[in-house]
Length: 73
Image (tube, rainbow, N blue to C red; front, side, top):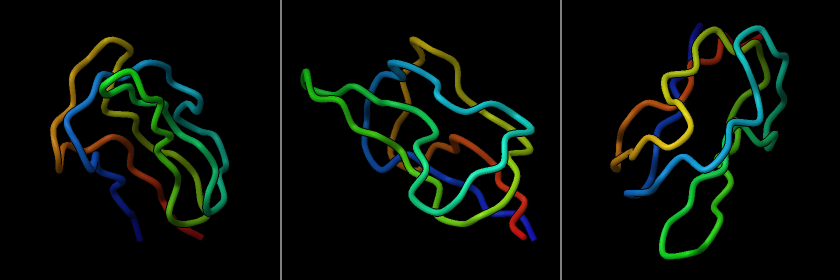
């Protein structure tokens, strides 16, 4: 079953930590967002394999925008 990780606020994608094909666990950092000069890590919510990253560095995301898709174990 796949799980989509979504943005929880309007922010810039500052850096991408994970890539498609990576194995992740709950609480692993996928990307770092920047909003109001604060860095906000976006964490995996389930263990599994990243099948898609739907953002790129410098992109602006809004609340509810998909960031990554994880195929859970």
